[in-house]
Length: 362
Image (tube, rainbow, N blue to C red; front, side, top):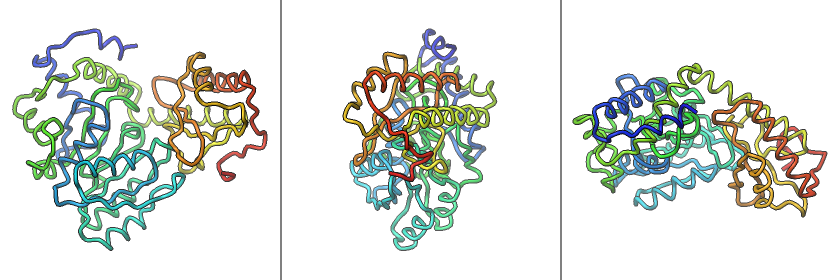
């Protein structure tokens, strides 16, 4: 409620108090991942994808080459962005239920000295899988390459320390685990990498170096900022810190995730991922193998009971996804389980009672 209420106040985008608000947010976002003096936070108007494209377009030079370990839809989006940018790219394909393998990344870097950067999605929310960021960061650093991380759904939830993990840029946004509202992305970027990125960007609006240079000089955003989104993020960060920060946010989401999985498994539904690689952010479930099941109808019925589902992101298997994050606790997850069970019953969908406790029977 406090986050929504913060949006009721109007701010002047050039006002000194608003500039101070922005500065405080950037400071706190940096502290969440241990930015220290080596990294700076550069905020950007737009969704998380805007910030991902800004990081790639600014930090990867025109003659750079990017390795993308791909095990889901958001990895594929990075590849598509690089195509638009005209940057050379090499893709290592992994199964969507398998985490990126640091050994294969290491081998790819050893085999191709032209690769300058690795772009890694930390938590691939197309499935909910968590990739092994500490190990991947160590491999990339050992090969002398640069690492750009899409931490959209892991930021503030899964521990990340940019002092312990050699990361050039960590990209996230105002929503997801911070529980703000959509509309502002940001990049926690190594200062020396940012300073070396002058004139790299293909876009004025998405030039992180220009944004940072202007903000450092004036304290202001270059172009009209999403003032209400920024104010909401300040309120959300205050609540985040009051809750106990990353450890407590992770603990609540982990309990939400466990409650959801246990409840839907009791209904007979199967998770797509093994428990060991499941992030407590979003869970993918196999759709019931029953002719009466229809996702749009299923979605509508669950929505009318107060819960919003996500469609599946897989191309070869029919699935649906349920989020575990937001300003909710296990009691809400119990409610979601009840709503899903009721919707399936109303539709006459039969769910196999032989569902396994994990996904070994894909």
